[in-house]
Image (tube, rainbow, N blue to C red; front, side, top):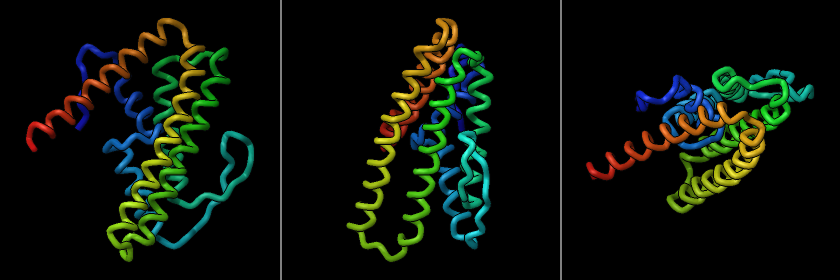
Length: 183
């Protein structure tokens, strides 16, 4: 269920895409990571694709699905804020970090799923701590890439994205406060 500030522009779905790309633990990323993990348990059918960097890499079906999901959400965000030709370079940097972060998270959850059934409580906690630490590192990298992009945006674009970020933060805070209230 998405909470939305009715006064916010129609960028909320695009912001949710940004959150997914960033690797923040929301229901969207949990669903995508779960799907990637479930797919990872299938036979390791590998597919060769050409990412936007022009290099060829081998990706599992789960990784392909994750990147397709991230790319679709990034495309919505790009359209919503109206990235211009002058902003393309910064946008590209941001999207590359987003994709890398998504793959990092999917890979860690896939690795965790392979050993989860044999982990003791300490190993389980260490495994989750490693995921959280990598997610924090990746978020810092994404933040730096986003700062570069944000600096290139027009004041009108900045205002749009500021409103979206604020609305999403308010919704997430309300969701967490509601959970605390019911504890």
